[in-house]
Image 1 (cartoon, helix red, strand yellow):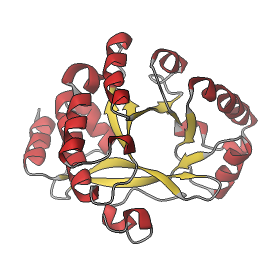
Image 2 (tube, helix red, strand yellow):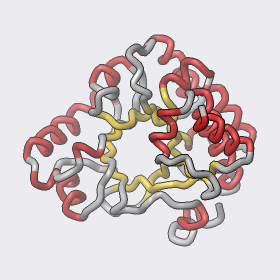
Image 3 (spheres, rainbow, N blue to C red):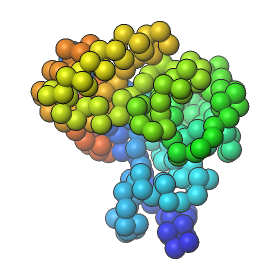
Length: 251
């Protein structure tokens, strides 16, 4: 109860703000998109990281935080828009009309909807109404927004979701598959399989959690084209990345 109260106070005071992390092509390590992530002012101490915070507060509050951060990002970015990946859970789409609200926010800032990709994160529900979820995703697709499956390969993001969720354009591999991949032939074989498998669904593979050059080289050898992780850049403010990348130089 105390954490919820403190979180709602921080939300009222505008304490949450966006940071971004680049998603790059392995061939030249240039950004093709940026994942929007949430951070908060140091005046608030929740005693946990962002993932833990969102798992411990109610879903509606977590969505309101995400949308408040999105407003700040698009307000800053709309004069020079970039490709942006935004994390939204299936439950946000099913229970709170997140699709319509994201579209409304983007339209308010004249932000091109085709530059926004929705990353489906999981809250580990035991049941997902896939037909209803696909209706919500169709709203996004009809507005030229792409769909990405986050943390693929974990307990809640499995092959079943790839089959049952319509029009997935990205599959983001959980960092578990990337750890020690340069030494693990089983993981390399699995990635080779996924690289051959994903195009059947019209999806690209993105490797998350890349931290070393040797991982980068191994992923490229396995046929992975896109990656994200500390090796390419840590999450940081738009102002910080504007110093390095012309695509957001004036954001």
